[in-house]
Structure formats: C-alpha cells, structure tokens
Image (cartoon, rainbow, N blue to C red; front, side, top):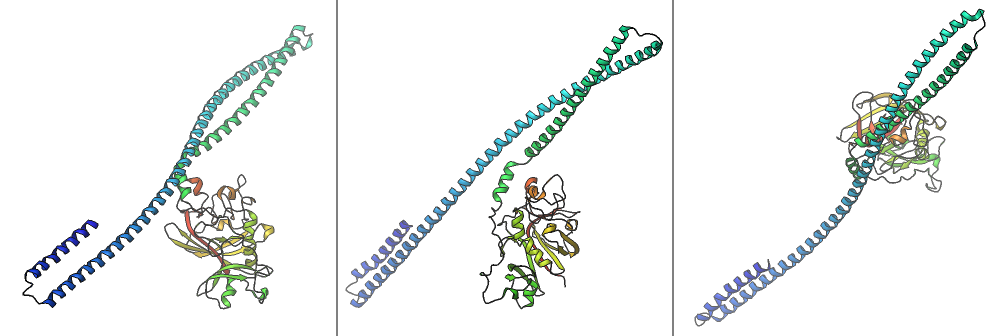
Length: 460
C-alpha cells in the first residue's frame, strides 16, 4: 500500500513538472498573473494529495490496531480451546483406563463363573452317586428287616446285629454328607447368581459410549446451588401495608387490577406471606409453582428444600410444597402443565387438582380435564411426594428420586418426572436419559423436554 502511494505521488509530481517547463519556454508570451494562478493550483493539488495520504495513513493505522486486537482475541480463544481439549483428553484417558479395568474385572469374573459352574457340576455328580449308594443301602436294610422278621421267633446272631448297626451308622453318615453337599450346592448357586448380577452390571457399563457421555456432560449447563424461597419477614414488606391485605393468590392479584405478569406478594389463609410469580393474561391469572427453562438451577435437592422452595422466581424455580398446599387448600384448583420439547413443539394438559398436607407427605390427587398432551399423570394420583432423602414411592427395591434425580410424585421408577436433570439435547446415554426431564404416557412416545411450566388457578 505504501509503495503504491509513493508511485502515485511520483506520477503527480511528474505531471505537475511538465506544465512548468512549458511555462518557462513561453514566459515571454504569457502574462504574469496566469503564472501565479498556476502555481497556486499546484499547491492546492499538493495539499489535497497530502491530506489524502494523511487520511489513508490514519485509516491504515486504525486497520492495523483493529487487526491486532482481532488476532489477540483469536489467540485467546485458541488457548481456551486448547485447555478445554486437554481437559477432555485427560477425562477420556481416565475413562479408557476405567474401561480397561472393567474389562479385566469382567474377564476375571467370567473365569470364576466357569470354575464355579464346573465345580457345581462335579458336586451334582457326587450327589447323584451318593443318592444311588443311599438307595442301595436302603434296599439292603429292607432285606435285613425281612430277615429280622423271619428270625423274630428265634435268637438273632450277634454278627447280624453288628452288621445292622454298621449299616445304620453308614446310612446316618451318608445322610449327613448329603445334607452338607446340598448346603454347599445352595451356597454355590447363590454365588453364581451374585456373579451373574455383577457381570450384567459390568456389561452394561461397558456397553455405553464413554466419549459420547463425556461430551454430553461437557455440553450441559452447570446448575448453580439454588437460593431458598423464604417466607417474607415483617421487615421485608412495606411497613405501611398490612400483610393481611395481601391477595390470597394470583387470581386475586388479577381481580385487584394488575395486568402484567411478574412477582407479587400473597398471603393464603392460615399462612405467612411469600412471593409468587403470577402468569397474567387477558382472561385471568395463574400462580406458577414450577418452571424449567435453561438448567441454571439444580433440582436434585433434599426434602427440606422441596418443602420450602428454591430457585429464582424470574427464571427457574420450585415454589415449595408447603406454599403450594397453603394455596390449594383454599378451594378447588386446576393444575395446568405446559411443555415444549426439543423440536419446539408446545403442548398442554389440565387436571382438577387437590393436595394433602405434610402429614400425608403432600399426596396429590388428579382428575384429567383437557389438553392436547397425552395423559401421563393420572396414574400418579394418590402418590406421595418423594426426594432422595425421603423415599415415599411405590417401588419396594429402589429409591426412584435417588436413581432418577429430583423430587416428584413417583409411582414407580421410570415414570414421568418434570423435576429431573436438565439436559440440552436427547442424550444417547440411557443412564443420563433416565435422569432427565421427560413426560411418559402409558401409551405412545416419551417426550424429552426443553421447557416446563406448572401453574394452578381456581376452578371457578
């Protein structure tokens, strides 16, 4: 660019030099004022050219600074990518090492399983031979008893008495041996079953794609520790306003003239005041009790937090079982569930809704009303609420909240769960997929969800 500018400047100088020679040759024939005007014109051209070159240099300087800044940004992003790729490589190598250990353990267990199976076959053959010997001994004893009957009228010889005693001792010892062998066979059978269970669990671990699961975990948002949704203290509300004047729920907020959705204080009957998010439309208002939008809040919490409530009322939150109960106990309410999957399909469903109190572990009762979403909650009616530290589900051998993440009205593990782990896409890993947010009707497809909102409003 600089070379081109110098060439251009030289050309202009050469062009300006040519008219000067002509002027010198014809100086006798040209008037003096014309020569002065020509010189001033040349100076104006030089000034314009100089200004143009200065502007060009300034633009070049700004372009260079901007380019340097962009290059520095690129280098910073490359460094971040290198660190992330290195961390991912370390995690992948660790997973590969664990996978090799699992393979070795599986091979070892399979070898032990073969040895135990061979030993069991050998014991079974011994038991069969012992049973056959026992039957032979019993036949001998039977023949001796017949002889005893024949000799009952006379004195039995001493040798026969000794033989009978010896045979009885042999039979007793054989029966004891058979019992011991049966106990050992039973123990071997139990060991075989435990080995099969271990092998099956190891094979399940080996079947998943560790790199894919690591990538999915790195792509998921890292949820924050949620804030508790406390009740409003007396000093946190307007001192000039009586808390008894607070509305009882969002429908009353609407009746008092509010027309914008947002956070409002309410005070249900026989409850302390607390904040809620009111979803207000032209037709009325509903109290939102749960919302999932981006995975910013960790919903895998204990019973106390699910009872009090946690999260951010403007984003993701769970209002709290005690607060939901204090609203729902005021009358007949409708439960509205709005869902959106990762194909951006939106659906809803509504139930007639009642909730029992804390002594019944907040048992839910639902009656399906309407909606374009397949019903997946009717089979949850009558279920108590469960968390990872308070197992109230109907599954006898497992804690569904611990195995599937999040608190919910579980019937059995694998049912619908709208408080599960938030995942950014449909995971290929079964272990991650079953811990996610999903809607599972009795028939039809399972919906893996991107957005959920649960709200309640009076039925009348």
